[in-house]
Length: 229
Image 1 (spheres, rainbow, N blue to C red):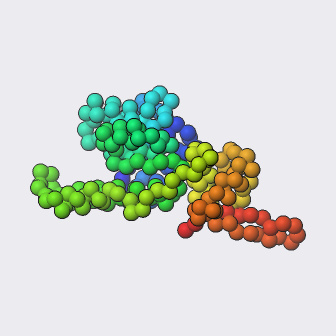
Image 2 (image 1 turned 180 degrees about the vertical axis):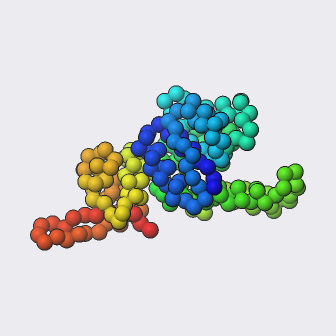
């Protein structure tokens, strides 16, 4: 099992991401933490394999976690996939320089995260097939690096939408069993029903969600939403 620590200051988003991780075969959640200090402590005590690392934390940047782990020279330190709303090139480059193996921009749904987790799983499998100190060739090196890339790029966030809110709505919809109304999504995410309706309508137009009409005995049909499979 690939033991994973989720680092996010929003407990609701953290719980959703942890639930996503738990759904991917071969992964388990070792802890959910909210701060730079707690993330460093979790690495030292739990020795996880992977961090899902937000950049916006109350006591610093998620990149500070990687810097502190590098300075401390933690034995067999974890890999990191950055999951954040930060889309500026400076943050992306800094994450690359600090050794992040992936960078996933919020908002995203289960499919996007699962693709990256599967790609990371493939990368680990490729590397683990070689004995320590063994040599390889260029073709094998290329295969190892390509294994860490997802097969499809993530969709770009829409203009005029709040990235954290869209992430919450998409994540709530991803847990639908079998579907949800706008009012139920609003209750799960803490936004108004009108806001939930607006974001759900966008997801339907994007093709990330399906709209079903449930007809009762009288009155207008109820709109029910479910994730696109």
